[in-house]
Amino acid sequence: MKKFPEGFHWGAATASYQVEGGIENNDWAEAAKQGTVPLCGQACDHFNRYEADFDIAKSLGHNAHRLSLEWARIEPEEGQFDQEAILHYRRVLQALEARGIEPYVTLWHWTLPTWLALSGGIERKDFSAVFARYASFVVNELHTEARHFSTLNEPYSIIINGWLQGEFPPFKRFPLLDGFKITGDDVDSKKTKPEWLAPIKYFTLANILARAHNEAYSAIKKISPNTKVSIVFQIHVFNDSGSLYSKIISYFENWHRNHRFLRMVINQCDVLGINYYFSSDVGSKKVYPKTDMGWDSRPEGIYEALMLVKRYQKPIFVAEAGCADAGDSFRADYIKATVEGICRAILAGVKVEGFMYWSLLDNYEWAYGFAKRFGLVAINYATQERSIRPSAYVYKKICEDNGIVE
Ligand code: BGC
Image (cartoon, rainbow, N blue to C red; front, side, top):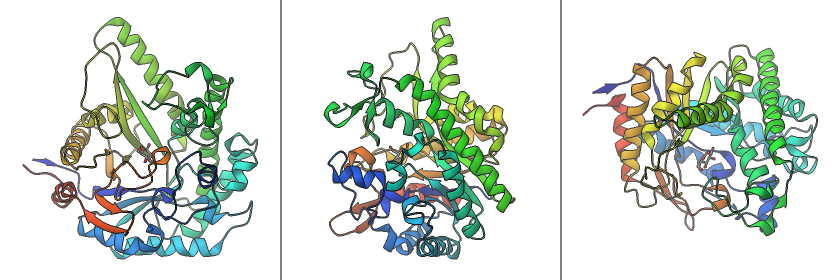
């Protein structure tokens, strides 16, 4: 029996652009119009169906839910905030509260309003101030509806995909990496722009995003000192395989890919959100089964991911971990192994407060469009019909038992 601390938050995550539908004024929608990424269109129509979707989450035993707000809806023009959009999100948060589901709100999950992307995006000199202004506006409006606000999601995914690999807006790629596969994808170089300064940008953009988080943290705290503020950071674990060489390389990789950034923001985090998808074994050729993304299936690695951040002594919530599995043939085992890994980390002294499976619904998987299926709930995009996958019931039992009861 693997019991979790009382009050542990069990739920699932989504992100606005991936599920809401009907968003036409951000950088991804612009790219889709130009044929650089797949169209998102109505996605899961979650914008209109959120109540029914939260009913499903409730029926599945969830007591927490991570969602993001669409910056382009809230600030459609620079400095102009849309009260209708705020009203919508207020209703969304109230719908969660009515069902006894604790919201974890992410202010920015990758998509930028078109005006911001056109005026330089995160490379704009005043980006951190622009982001802090947006963050403080939202928290001022919504802090009575939610206790947890994360500033931004996965800084390195933005940088690696947008400036090194050319998969995300602004589609820049470092030409010397052509032919190498960082995430297992081939880059279509016709749709991308060469960025020879990418290795320098990698560091400067990371600094910009850290500053954006820190300024937003201060701005939010001035408005609402009791709001719990976090960043959501994807941990990529590098394990050594015993040799001195692998120890040196994995130490360097863990510092450079994880700790370097975390050290810039950790003092401005009340809580830390972590996402976990990847572990690498340095100097080992061990082969793992693959998820539908072509990624190694290593859910148990969440233990090492959590141990890696133990040193920061912060409360932690797992903001995402999950797998694409259209056939639902290994998702239940993936979830169980994830939960066991979290349990081991808690026993080893990591203060984990919640786990949000990625994702509640099948959704728009960025450059892959709708092909990949991460959901506990399957979506028929032609009819918008929802069907609960069998693995969702395995997770439901875990949520209701507050752990794994064998
Ligand atoms: C992102 C999600 C994405 C998931 C699966 C995470 O890094 O936050 O938006 O859908 O990975 O690729």
